[in-house]
Image (cartoon, rainbow, N blue to C red; front, side):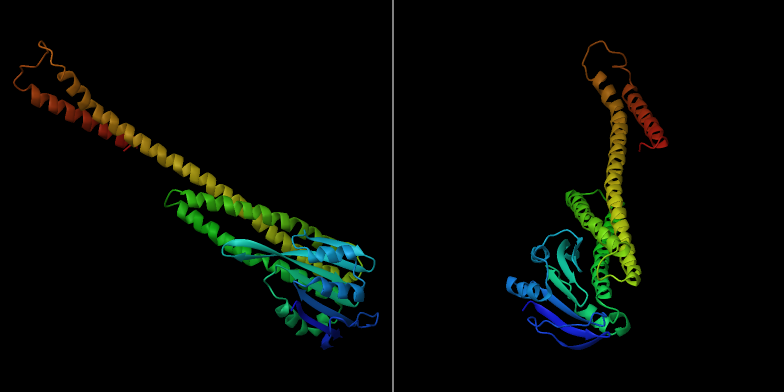
Amino acid sequence: MSLVASYLYRDGRRVRPVPLDEHVDCPADRSEFVWIGLSHPCDREVATLQRLYDLHPLAVEDALKDGQLPKVDVYGDQLFVIARTAHLADGTIEYGQTAVFAGTSHIITVRQGSMRSHQPLREQLEAAPDLLGRGVDYVLHAVLDFVVDGYLPVVTAIEDEVLAMEEKLLDAFLDRPDIARIFTRRRDLIRFQRILLPMEEVARKLARSELPTIDGEARAYFADVLDHVRRVEAMVAGLREVLASVFEFGNLLEQQRTGTIARRLAAWAAILAVPTAVAGVYGMNFTYMPELHWRYGYFTILGVIGAVCLLLHHRFRKVGWL
C-alpha cells in the first residue's frame, strides 16, 4: 500500500483521516489543511490526487520519475518541490527522492527510493500544534529540514572513514584497496555535491523569493534550511580536500621511504664494493703482482678492507644513509 498517512489538520491538531479519493473543502484562512504522504505510489493513486487537487501534469510526471534534480516550480497558486534524500547502504551512498505538492490547504509528499519514513516527522509536528497550526509552508519547511538533516550521518560516516585512512597512512603504505577506496569516496563526494548545489538553490528560493503558499514569516525557517545545506556542502568540500591530501601525502611518504631504501642500498653497495674490488684485483692470477709473496700480506689486506668498510659505515651513518 503506497498510502502512508492522510489526515485533516485544524489549528495544528489532527482531526480525522482523509480517504485518498475524498476532497476536503478547507477555509481560506489556512487554519485547516490536508497532509497526504505517499511512498512509491501507482499511477492510479496519483491520478486521483491530480484530479482532486488540480495538480499540474508536468509536476505529476516528475513526482513519479525517480532521479530528478532538486528544484522549485510554481504552478498557479501551488508549489512543486523536489528534494533528494541520501543514506548509506553497505558503505555506498544511495539516493532517493521526495516530491512535495504544496497548496493553500493541502500538502502531498511523494517518496521514491527514500528509506526514511516521515512518520517520526509527523509525530514531532503533531507534538507542536502551535507550529503545525501556522499552515502548509511550515510543514514544507519541516519536510525539507528532515531531508537535509539526513545528510549529516552520511557525511559523518565518510569523515570517520577518511580519518581512519589518515591514521593508517602513518603506519603503512597505501595498498591497492586503499587507493581504490579513496577514488571511490572522491567520486561519491563529487556526486553528492551535484545534489547539494541545486538543494541550496531550492532553499535560497524558498527563503528569499515571493512564492505562493509561503508566508513572509516562514522565510526565516527556510533560511535555516539554507544554512544547513551550506554547512553540509562545506563539510563535503573539506572531505574532498582531505582525500586529495591523503593521496598526495601517501605518495610523498612512499617517495620518501623509497628514497631512504635507495640510499641504504647505495651505502651498502659502496661498502661491499671495497672487498669486491680488492678481491677482484688479487684474483687476476698474474705472475708478477706486488705483495703476492709477502708473509703478512693476507692479514694486511683483510685489515685494510675492514678499516675502509668501517670508515665508510661510520660516514654513511653520520649522514643518515644507514
